[in-house]
Length: 446
Ligand code: ADP
Image 1 (tube, rainbow, N blue to C red):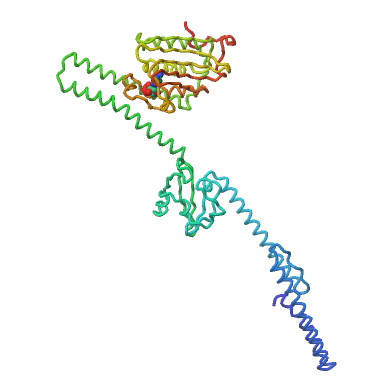
Image 2 (cartoon, rainbow, N blue to C red):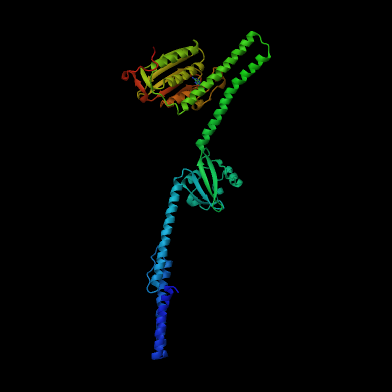
């Protein structure tokens, strides 16, 4: 018998003993009265405690356990201890849940917890943003009512969750999402959502780039292979032979130029090639570019040079010379004979340096301008090829400008001509008057 049960029997035992003693000393009527009063007192005492416990149990969850007297004292103390232990346990659980929610909120990926029937239980803020869910409103909704892209529905249906489903975002179809389901306890699933727009764009660019390079190499290789077969199979007279060999050499040069431009681009993009900081003499750079223009033009164009204010530019001489050389070569190639090509350098009021090439050539319609510096983008493919273009020149120029903290600016009008300019930030431009370094700048004419 537990102490509490023993104590609970103490008062009924006292009443019984008093009743018996009264029966022996004062007769049955008095014993009945004593027993009756004692029994009512004991029942009232218990009822009073029961009523207080019932009121506490029906009250707010954090209400204090009532105090008790007599046998109820230790009993209510035990209940009080249990309630306190439960409160501590619940608080611990609440803390764990709060930490879990904070971690889920901090996750860069969207996470949705689905129950065994694929209904939404919880969704972190990122999932709400990516999938257009409203955690409070959509709780309990089947996920297929809210994520309705056919790719996801087929993925869910197939039940093979080792892979991911790539689907366009329901909110912004231009964005791509990778969705993955991860089954866990008792048929539940985690739906992980990640925005892979940039990654997919890079992968697409890489695929397109490889396809473009293969295509660019295929054409000259096919021509060369065809001529080799002809030379092997046919008896040709020396003049025909010389012509075929000349055409083969031209195609080989095209491939060499393409490979050289590809290597230049890859070096410009590589993190192993930080920009060198040389003092580049702009006037000498302009003079060299003008000589190159005259050589390419073979006297078919007027070549003007406006060397502007003497200055040096902090940057890579070779990169700037190669970029500017590309602009000059384009100007000559896209300007019919008799046209004019003008090379110039100026420093703007804000100190920005502008290396420009203007021509009176074929010009470019406005709709083509935004894509002009993309690799292999050409307005007129056959003209570019016919003049030995690789389709990479402006991509190289843009990269060089960006590496120097500048930009490539293009103005053009179809049929009237174009101006291509490399704008260099003032921080790289030192007008001659303020040159203090005694070191001879690179590019200075001997
Ligand atoms: P490409 O080797 O084909 O010249 P670029 O990258 O240098 O490649 O130029 C991309 C395209 O921009 C060219 O194919 C041509 O259509 C156009 N373009 C470039 N420079 C000029 C220019 N000065 N005048 C007219 N079109 C130009």
